[in-house]
Length: 294
Image (cartoon, rainbow, N blue to C red; front, top):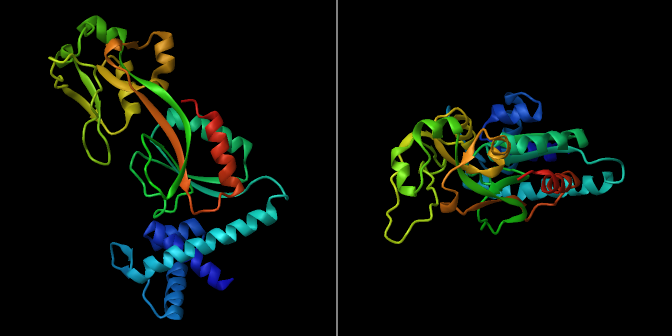
């Protein structure tokens, strides 16, 4: 069991790249984590980490050891799950990454927590493209096509995307009638966090029509901010319908250039194909699939 504890500490340090953060997650001091790693390295006769004052990174031996250790911990978790599945509700810690869309994500998270109080959630609410395997996530929610062969995916749903503006903005500036009119409007644009590139608006153009150069009146790496500003008469923006569903129904926002946009976004939940799907992970996947209001 001492070896298993050492393996658990090693995996946590490898995933967080920090003795302090690993200690916080495990409920022990950073010095205790450091001593455990040192004992493991002495027992194995190899160095597992390169350490400096600013970073902790795996050595080649550490990288090889990490893959084996994750498998060991997965097997232990699977064995515990088999023994305890008949004893009560799913329990334990789940590490999840989701897009930075609290309007969409948090109602489902809130409902899940109420239904499964014994499951502890560690949620990374971020638009960055995490590496599910290397960073030790149990599952992630993402959009777009999924091509990682290391992961299993389940479709959560799709929704349309629309250009919207407030009645107040349109009253002052007029409604664009063609895509080319957008060059004279305030455009609230989304920037992809991973690349820094602006998201193109998928406008349906005539063959002779050039794509308009959108004025970057405001740029943000999260789309919820864009919906907020559109509601406050700041301009036109391009967002998924779930973000503005209530505002469209109440008339607080209006669709513009609806005949020139036809695009949907699909949400998926993904988890490691090689990892045992524990009861806590299975109920999370099922709950999100049934309750995410895309």
